[in-house]
Amino acid sequence: MTPSAPTPHFALRRTARTALDAGLSALASALCVVALTAPTHAQQPPPPPAPESRLTAEIHTNSDRGFVVCALFANATGFPSDGATRSIAHLRLRPARHRVTCTFAGLTPGTYAISVFHDEDSDGELDTGLFGIPTEGWGTSRNAHGTMGPPHWADARFAYRGGAIRLREPIALNY
Image (cartoon, rainbow, N blue to C red; front, side, top):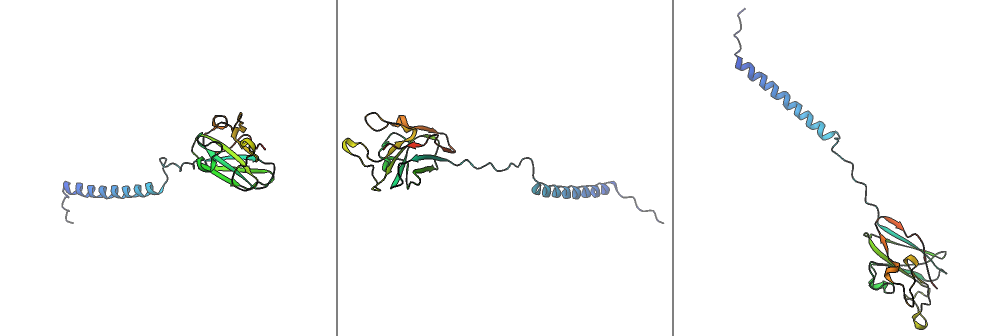
């Protein structure tokens, strides 16, 4: 047997370094695959959807004839009689069993007031008699009443903080 020539020291280092580099590279690749596929504590579930912004008011009528017109006002301008042009939203609904539910959606938090009239003859207007006194049912949020005239915005307004809410008390129409 011939003795083998001794391996130079620097050759062993190069071989060990190459093996170490290959092992570290394989380990790094495996860690990347695990990190990409496994859930981590840093991942959070998606936030819950924002609550729906919806305001609902119930209105009681004395008949099921015609329509009930609900108008939502964001300020005193035009309140309570100019709902068609000055309100931020208005609805025209047919009563059933002497009731109507007016629902306004997509609102931002703020101060609002609701004006309602029962258009029994379906002419699109609140009919009035002598001295402008309404001959069809009318009402406002908070069941506000005016003195010698229509109710004031300040008496009918309420704070809406967002979410889906129903006014505490139904709007009672005055006939």
